[in-house]
Each structure stands twice: as C-alpha cells, then as structure tokens.
Length: 161
Image (cartoon, rainbow, N blue to C red):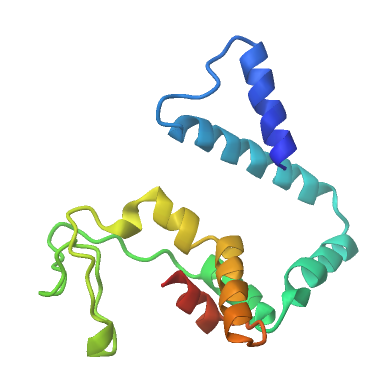
C-alpha cells in the first residue's frame, strides 16, 4: 500500500500538479479516498469464499477478542448515527471543552479542559483510534508484563488511554 501511495505521489508530481499542499490535509484526504476506491474495487471482484477466508485470517485469527472486535464493528456500522448536539444542549458542569458526556461512574467523568477538545484533532484519531497502533501498544504492554496478548475491546480501550 505504501508503494501505491508513493506511485500516486510520483504520478501527481510528473503531471505537474501540486503533490503536497501546505497542511497535507488535502493530500491526505486524496490518498485516503484513492485507497478506499482501490479497496472497494478489490472487494467487488472477490468471491464470497475469498471474503470469508480474508475475514478468518485477518480478523478472527488475530488473537483473543478478535471475534468480539468484528461483532462490535458490525454493531457500530448498523447503529444509527449519534445525535449531533444542538447549540441548546448543555454539557455536564464539569466539562470545559463541550465535547464530554456523563459517564456511569463519577471517576470516569473527566474533561481535557481545552477550548478545542483533543478528540477533535486528527492526531487523536490517528493514534488513539487506529487499530494497528493500539495493537502495537497492547503487544508492548503484554511483552513488558510477560502477559498473553489480549485483543478484547477492554484491552483496546486501555491501550487508547
């Protein structure tokens, strides 16, 4: 995939178009869209048996908790989108960033206390919500503590913190 992205960049540069904008956001969005198109085209050509094989190998055979992860992905995909907060909505009194929601336990009610909440930054999505990054964190923690790898949703949540 990295090779594909490099080739796309080289083709863009050869065609005389701007390869990377100052922020990198537009270029990243283009590359993500291009990658998604490639994935969709690849999946469209697969037979049901091949898709099942890839699912077993890449999702379910990755370790304990992977089936839980796959089920959770489908639940989230099929769930209705969360309601967008309207200007009249009030956040909890302890929230300063206006992105927090009340949690069941008082100890969980914590705010980042920033004007722009850290959950709205792309770096948060790239680090705290990226499955591959979280797996590396889990493996490193398990290696240090001499534990078995555990890829349950609880373990992913812990790694995200």
